[in-house]
Length: 209
Image 1 (cartoon, rainbow, N blue to C red):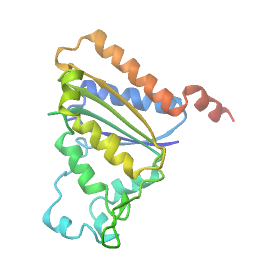
Image 2 (cartoon, rainbow, N blue to C red):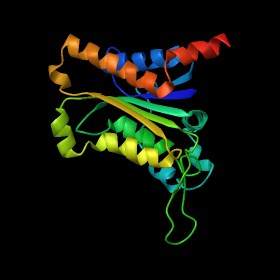
Image 3 (cartoon, rainbow, N blue to C red):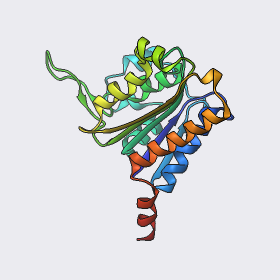
Image 4 (cartoon, rainbow, N blue to C red):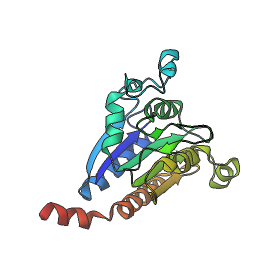
């Protein structure tokens, strides 16, 4: 398994960082190869500028400036996003990452004729996961429509392999969370990752073989 973890939070000591560390720990326990993209740590520029936009459809020139990120995306078979939900959606930096890195010629194939639609390009990605926190309650997030979750688990998933497996866990009411609720959420995240990977036992067997 080749897992790419995309982490987006401005503070390294945040609870979101603890979620990230839990995810990576369980992936390593399962014997997965892991790469981490920490968007704030590398000061990723989320802005799709006018020049970049003008060349958006020119393959492979459209990778200029984000070559390493595109290479990571093409390397992985498991794609995991760890971020806080802000205003029911993705943080601006993460949305900008999708804008700049999920490119024609890599993430999807542009239509070639009138009336055609885009075709998936991430067909090597067989597992997709979102681990997030929400200030709002579960019911209010559902009432609004959970646009961040939908963007990834519906929109990005549509570009992935047919039958792509998904995993999701959110800590709701984060602003009134407790040490106990946060510990329960980390345990929930660990279980979701183990279920997605087949668990640590399989990783141990693979390493011993």
